[in-house]
Amino acid sequence: MTIPELGNLEQVDLRQAWPHEARSFTPWLSENIEMLSSVIGIPLELEGQEVAVEQFSADILARNPRDDSRVLIENQLEQSDHGHIGQIMTYLAGLDVNTVIWIAAGFKEPHLSAIRWLNDHTIEPFAFFAIKLSIVRIADSPMAPVFEVVVKPNTWERQLQSIAKETQSSSGVGEVRKKFWTYYLEKYPEEGQYGPANGSSNRWRPVIEAELVVSSYISKRSVGLFVRGHRGVDQKEVWNQIEPFTEELIRKTGGSITSDGSFHDFWRIDTSNESNWDEMADWLYQKSWIYGNALSEMGQESVN
Image 1 (spheres, rainbow, N blue to C red):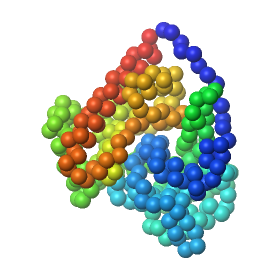
Image 2: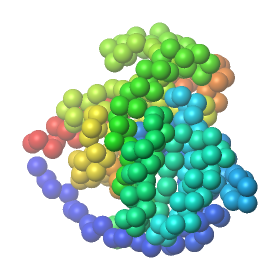
Image 3: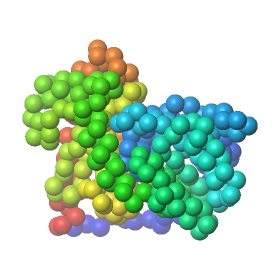
Image 4: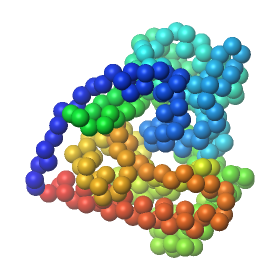
């Protein structure tokens, strides 16, 4: 096996990428919210930026299309501070959110303890995340964001399973998804081997050779897919596995890979318009097979 030439991963100051939190980082994250989705394991749909709550403004308000619950994303390009804890509690009440994602350049231990306490002393469906943001690059390559989950709910995997089961029998959004996935399976019946149509936003395709999963999804404004490990596998482990093959995977799939192991692709389209469903089904089918084949070849190479 030929070992590819490897470079050194360098840390970059966040302000080089985003000089201003509200005017540069928040708009960027709003446009690339799928990156955050792949890290925490749920799809996110943007609802608003700088949403007013009393005299404060919540950075990003999103929605989890699996259960139609609201998600607060609070950004901080510096170390965590007490002020943001207070703002988060204000937004939690004022915006009726279930999930809080606090993104910062780093977290002081008292603030991590506070997030852990909230996860330990609130009941489902409340969930609190602390995510460390950094920027890296190799030599003169483009800068790449890294989202590292520092704190998450102890029962998060169980909550994801519970939400998925609930959406299978739900009305409204869940019924639309079930109708689309039914259409998808009618067009590509061989995909039925990965499970029947239901009201979930996601379908999983296991890639046995790589011990990874290609997760296809549908949201209100896009269809897409991302690569993740099996349940319980940390995203860092996924990154360690695919990192030596990043250039090859990008060339074969046309997707994007961030240095936290987020390997994803998406297409913005009005998914509620059934006249788009034929193209959506084709895109998801073709992409999922392209990704699956690329990962399968990667898995075979890694053992040779």
